[in-house]
Image (cartoon, rainbow, N blue to C red; front, side, top):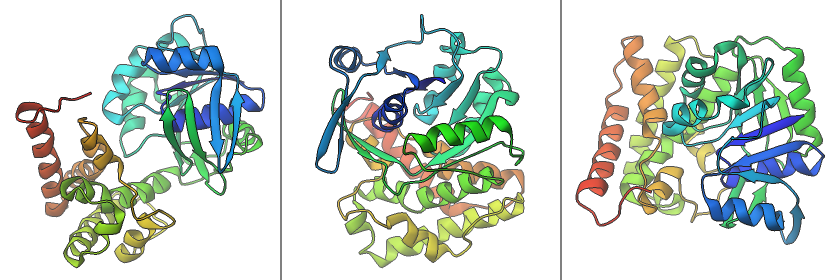
Length: 315
């Protein structure tokens, strides 16, 4: 299978490296020339626990010259989804599939508008990765599941084939009849902690020490559950406290949410695709979401401050 990872940062490199190691024809697309050069010259260095290995893999700054592929895995930041996919349409062949493993909700809709809904596969992964330096990653695969599925809930041959390829690569993959529900499950976990961590600058250790923060998080999740149920989304968890605790499960106290990490890099966040998705879907079904609206407003305010008042600029 010929596979292209569109937005191969730490997670994309982790997944791409695992697939390449089993013989898949994998291309990593990353805009950073130093990342691409290092991988093409030295291979992708992967650390798992205290062991390291080097996996030969191809990297590019753009999709130019790669040609049509069987599967595009989209892992760019949500706010770059349309731009990135429009710049990579030369990867599309007659039967090319496009799968989002991004954070948040709404990426599948954007991708559908660019390539057509018939190509789209939904997905959510709990695999993790940390970029130690360009071309050198710390991979978290063991015990981390990936869920994929057709948006209409059917189990197709193409979904089954992808699951087999991923599982063979050590990426334990489950085919779901309810991929939208799984995407919402992860969305609620991110909505519980992401914005509050970004606003307070607290890692998980501090975040979970403050009762007032927990109270706001539970209200945000309650709104999300109400919106999901109104839109007939089937969730695996409907207890806000369970979701709040699940968000920190297995993570160290110094773990930082993606929104906080974005702020520390001087970058804008994916808030529109996390708490912002709850607000958008709430408006569709006329359910008020004042807590999530407030969290979005605060994150937007910090982004504006960074752009116009701080020395740090967006990267």
